[in-house]
Image (cartoon, rainbow, N blue to C red):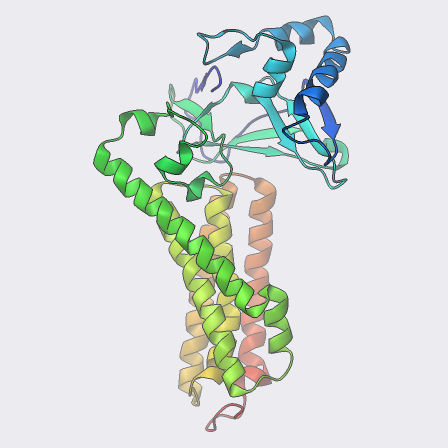
Length: 344
């Protein structure tokens, strides 16, 4: 756990708190593992430390060990190892960096700060920290130390912390903890269903190949089932995540996926089911247009809490999906010849 960071004023969701470069960092290749990590760690930290300015050395040495009554670390390598972040740039090498401000955040199973390491370009290795929820004056700013924590119940999180000291784990009632565990198990189950459904059809590439191959009726049914299931799984995951109080890009991506899949679901429904009148087609297209708009608005709202660039991507994708719906409505594949069945 870090030393703790608290808000000195009310902070709206989506506020960039700060960005910082690592105080020290080094890259390793894929030959480094847990068995030889210390052999790599100690000389690299010593070399990085020797190149720091006097003030930066003081900042590094001011780090405290939170599990030892906030005393100094036993060694510089220990201090770096405890507070490091891992970045994986496009080069393939793994970069380990120590960020003095970001390292002070405590963990929470319901964190309100999103941390992002920029991996390439002139901003490489810069850490950005933004709020993903409204933070009241005096409230602690927290992040998560666990990847994919959204899918972990309290028992799985114990693999990372014997005793989690976040506000929820300390103060929640047994009933609240049980409900939270149920939601996170559901999220984990829905993720598994998403993976298995995608694998059945070969992912997005497999779906595109089928749709571009003039499918027969039984293939349209297969595609419709796949798109419908995937959109449903994403929609359920998004609603459960919101009920759990989760925010940010995790929830945004679920809404985006749900919206993306509704367009091919609408197109395949035309051919998989006996929809043969103009009124039926109009109802279906209105449904697709209404719900893709709703889902993308939710995706944009969550993205804005984490990352302005992601929010802009969501807004562009919303326009693109709306354009796809228009194309779908006028496509011969969609309209076909009303009054007769689809490919037999």
